[in-house]
Length: 487
Ligand SMILES: Cc1ncc(COP(=O)(O)O)c(C=O)c1O
Image (cartoon, rainbow, N blue to C red; front, top):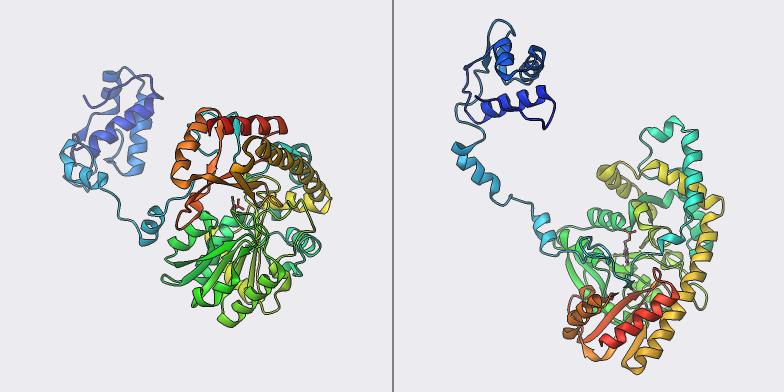
């Protein structure tokens, strides 16, 4: 009997699944006559309607032919050899063999990403997790956001529900251009702003639009690994440029970066060392880009957080030759799940980037864009930035104090003037001992993260990245105290 019933799902679905499976496995061969609906229903102890429904579905999908009532047969054109089942070993073997993947994918999997801290979902959350890369999401004014969403949905225009322009929602592009002008010294028009799904998509589009396999891309050493992965997957050849306490060492650029099409940089807060690139170096980079006919890809990922001195204006604000592609994101200042970022493009690159964005995903979700535009225009964004900066400054101060009290001269701290993380270098712990330290710290409930994955060539000294936004001051002090005892 080819139909077995249990109480796993509705009866007609079970009859349909059993007959279909019997056909695909060759137990019911082509042209075989099926029992009548009446006799099958009697045999199974179900209503005739149940069997009729199952046969109708099989007829509609082409597994069986004939007229219900005057004989039903397995469709004659089905192949003789069974499609599923034990006798189709060869096909099964093909199915379990590794799939044939593109070169792009092979390059991608041979350079796996560093999972952002806190991503290991199978791990118990750590009590003192110095994870970096995101703000304290509980600072976000969810009540305001909820109100704005409800307001947008109360009067949804038809435009909000259909496709919207790939370059982004016009009021959001205007709000961003205005914000960048006064906060980042970037003088751009809304037409030069392209809304994307976070900086990660901005980087991906840049690689698609500007790179061919074999092209050279220069980047800081160390650098943001998410960018490195994109360039490697695109088939680029990477050139690592040294970084010192002031950021990228520009004196090396002319020689080492020869032939590069693109240079990826984080001048406002070098990732991960935290250095801020001084003005003369910025001007040297602009000169180089113009001479080399290359683009500077400026990733300004967390410049809203600066604790001493005035924020340094973005390189894009100094660019007169259309050589800078500026990337900004709301991940660090609002919340990363929003997945909204933006590019500010030189005018000649606007159309090519819009074309790539349209192909990738048509456009960034419109409701989020509309709500974000209102959030900025109505002053909530600036208020939130001010509040977050004050709170982050208090946590940063607590971390610096705890490091001084518990680790003293054993460490030197780099890049604490801006951003939401700091880099701690050990004087007496080599990089080879960092994985053990990270493990022991985790066993004691403290999450700390090695800086080594952000290098092409790992450093000799041991270094840890400590994010401080998500822990309160007390937890920061306790966490560092435990880290010191683990050491
Ligand atoms: C330097 C840097 N750039 C870009 C990103 C990606 O941010 P987004 O969430 O906007 O894709 C990150 C994320 O951690 C980052 O650290």
